Length: 79
Image 1 (tube, rainbow, N blue to C red):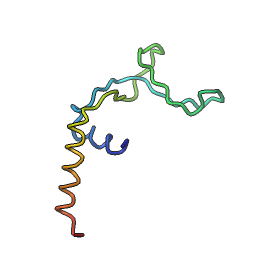
Image 2: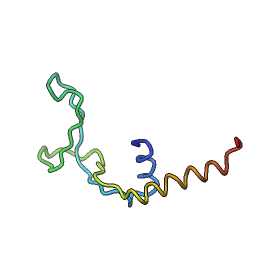
Image 3: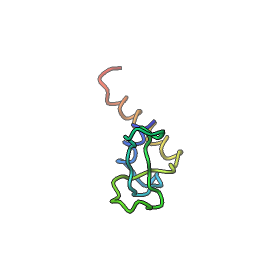
Image 4: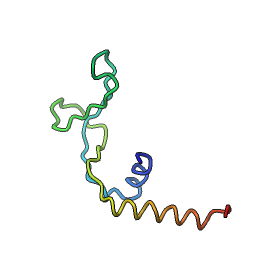
């Protein structure tokens, strides 16, 4: 549900708990290759470049999701 969560965040960020932090993807040739590394405690002291969500209000998210589908189906020319 990553895409739906991204859209929901843009529509109403209040349903998420999130933190601004430095994030990077490991591209060196190590055991962590390809991993997303989040500097949760600001240990690297680098500029924050991403918002990382840690919790979501599921009831509000699903209500928003279902209502969006309902609205689109009412407006769709395909019945």
